[in-house]
Length: 269
Image (cartoon, rainbow, N blue to C red):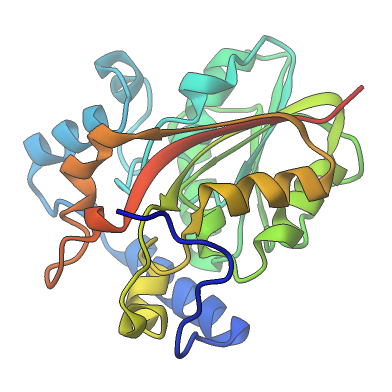
C-alpha cells in the first residue's frame, strides 16, 4: 500500500482535549481492572503476547504480577542498551513494567522515572514499587507534552506505544530533547502509519485511545525528531507485529494500516 503523506487529509479529527480525555478514561478503566486489558484471565495468552512483543521469559518473570498490563507494541528496553548508573525516563509508564525492567539494568546506582497522565495508573505503579522492591524507581503524574523533569537530567528516554496517543507529538519530542543530557538517547517502541486510515477512524475516541488513529507515517516521525534537534535517527518497522495488531479492533484488521516500529535518536553532544 502507498504510505500516507503529510498532505493527505481527513474529514474530521478529535480535538486535542477530546483525545486526552479519551486516552485518560481508557487507561483509568484499565488500571482499575484486576486483569490484563488484552487477555483477561488467560495466563497463557498473556505470556504469548508478552513474548510476541519481544520480551524474554526471564524478563517476564523478573517483574511481580500487576505491572504488565499487555499494553505495549514492543520492548523498548531491548534497544535502549541501558548501563549501570544511568537515569531513565519512561514516557507513559502505565503500571510500571518497563520501568522495573530498566531498574534491573541500571542497578542500584541508576534511577528510573515513570511519567503518566492517568492518576489511577500512577497509583497502581506506585503500589508496584513495593511489590518489586524497586527503590530506584519513582512515578510522577504529568503529561508527556509537559514533562515533570528538569532540563538535561536524563540519560535515556524509553516509551512503549504511547507517543502516538499524544495530540501534539512534536511537543513530546521537544520535551524529550529538553530532558535529555547532551549525548543522551531516545529508544522507544511505537506504532507508525503505513496506509491512510478510513475517515471514521480518526474521529473515533476508542481508536484514538487504543493506539490506532494517532499513528503517524515514518517520514513525519523523522521530521518531528529532526525538528526537535535529534540526530542519528533510525526507525525500523516490525512486520511481525501484524500478528498481535490485528487483534486490536474487532471490526477491522488494523494491521493493514499500522505497524509496530522501533524509534531511536540521539541528542548531540
